Amino acid sequence: MQNWRDWTGLGSEQTRGKKDWHECIDYQKEFETGILSGKNQYLDDEFEKTVNAYIEQLENLSRLIMSCILLSLDLTIDSNMMNNFEDNFYIFCQLFYPEFPAESDDESIGLGVGEHTDYGFLTMITADRGGLEIEVDGDWKEIKMIDDYLVCNIGDMLAHWSGTLKATPHRVRRLKGARHSVA
Ligand SMILES: O=C(O)CCC(=O)C(=O)O
Ligand SMILES: [Fe+2]
Image 1 (cartoon, rainbow, N blue to C red):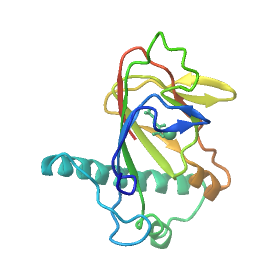
Image 2: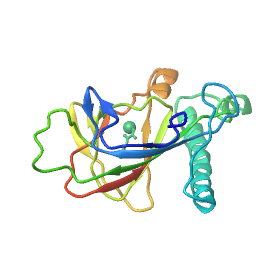
Image 3: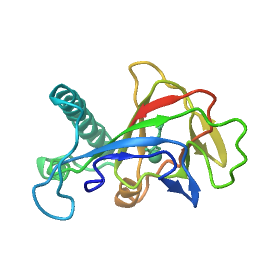
Image 4: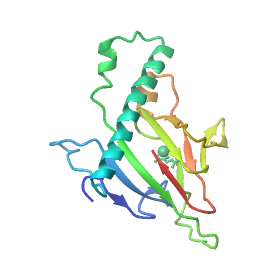
């Protein structure tokens, strides 16, 4: 494991004391020095190009969404305001959820991902099938995954920074069959 830029095995991540039933590979914005320094690890050069092209698109989309959110908060968008979002940080996760073992009575295992809010500003999710649920007024609602669409969740930092927006509580339920997502 190099500064969390690596593979995390099944059950190594926990939410609320329960093992999450997924494995993941994390990539982060790279820094030369400091606590977040470290290099991402890619399968090969071609894969590195693909991942970075996708991340660049997500960064552009995030800035666009942030400018819409600023407008909705009645904030004047000037270049100073948007500069705050130039020097960004991201974590890009490829997640694999294997089929949940039907017979398992292991109480240490929770869900695909247990209930949580993300700690960042925005999270963009795409997946090859459903399973993601968000909490609305105390009920869990399944999010339908639609081809060519992304799900965008508000994270703790944006909730705190805006003072009015709410971070989206979400989870991934136990699944029959495998699921892949990127977030
Ligand atoms: O796989 C998903 O749909 C969501 C993953 C997630 O909540 C996370 O990585 O924080
Ligand atoms: Fe999340």
